[in-house]
Image 1 (cartoon, rainbow, N blue to C red):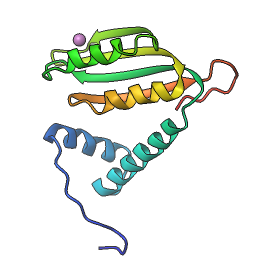
Image 2: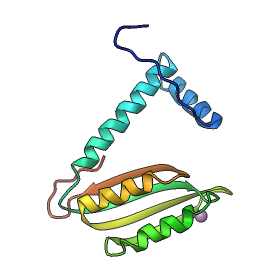
Image 3: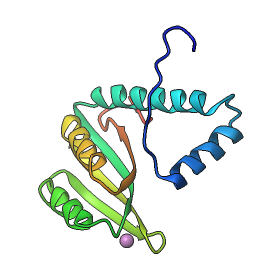
Amino acid sequence: MEQGLVRTCISLPEALLSQFDKVTQKRGYSSRSEGMRDAIRNTIVHYEWMNQVDGKRLGVISLVYEHHQRGLSENLARIQHERADLIISSVHIHLDHGDCLESVILQGEGKRIKELTETIMALKGVKYVKLNTISPSSSDQQPL
Ligand code: NI
């Protein structure tokens, strides 16, 4: 093993690993480990970017979640109702038998938009969350 590398063991759903392997193959990674390292780096970069979201913002949170996850739909509704002043609109699409796509359009303090995004990310059954924001007062647009 190369110096400075640490071996770790993670548990993943089989279908998720299979999808990941297809992506790493298509993108030409030399190994699954290299693909994992890149995915982890992307997560860190995105997290650091989210920490810089502050001031007045317009934002869109896109999420995909499992409709059948116990309590999740109710939790998502409650979380959004608690922040109703932040949310302008939302769109819900039933993707297939199991998954829903939701886009939540927001306007308000960036730190609160970030906090809402992280609250959604932490829910079990949420498969994908992406936040994009722009600063409404200038051409300083910072979508990721
Ligand atoms: Ni749905």
